[in-house]
Image (cartoon, rainbow, N blue to C red; front, side, top):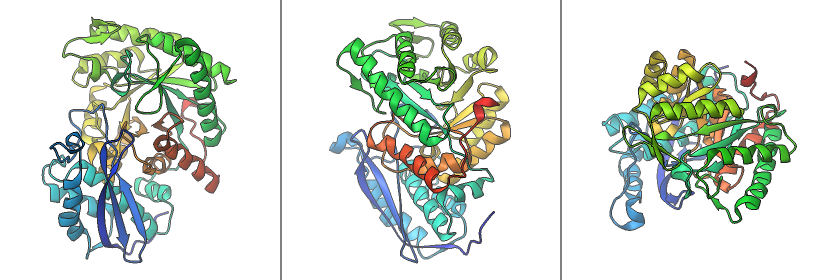
Length: 427
């Protein structure tokens, strides 16, 4: 039920430069309400990014290799704080709309999507506080959804732009679809991860770790990786395809040259790559494939939907970039059946809500996602629960910035045990 909203007044809006999980600067924003309550939001950053993503504001120059955000900190002080303080805001849409107009470029090229998303997340928390309801419940009210605990998709092996190895595919994920609840799911993920480490060390010796906490074995063979993951699931006392399913994020734009895809040291056609996906889906319990082709290779997307779309989630990330209009167009073209949702891709929480509503309208599933450059901010955990998406990926069940999201989910489960665990795989 919607709660009464008497409006939100902000006493201050401040920002500071912090480091993300890759050691790069990012922005953290803090808002203080008239009653003295303080709320923060921080901006993640991606390594594998779509051409149509909203733009970050970076300093350039020599400090931090040009990645500093001190200009964004100054912008918040000089422009955002005067804009947002001294006014009563009735909805987050009003605040996000004011940020959008302040920017004026349509893609946050002036104030930066990192500025916009950090301010927007902090203000979303402030609105939930002002209405005296938990954040996930406030999100549910905005979207008209039923909150549900999502199935976590743990990124246990990294490749592509996330790791210094030969794997073309960027992420190999395990999804504990057969868990009793989110706590059981997190335990499954952690036990598979531990078993996988033992399996990989016995095969490869020393092990690297990728940006998102997954292991980065020295191989370019996805079959070898998938076979090892299958053994690790069994070693953890679970059954592949029953307790646990697999997912891939190919991030194919990272190994595409405009015409061909480079896999195993050879350039291959889109038809060759499609045949590879069909073979993998036939031999492993893979239920979802993200970004199987470059965002510009739309005929190949249509082809994979024809071949696998009736039994595999074809998940668009770079091709949709959390943009409602692009999601609607993709549904019309029948090039995917699901959309990845990353708030910083589009710039504000309000625009993220619009993407979620549109995906629901066109019959797409949605998965909430982190970025490779993450912070300890747990907003996306509440977003996944409140939006009722049934799916989230936040990296491996390791590293503080990743487990912060999973720990937030288990905390919500303890506080609100009535929240059920998603059952989408039985549809």
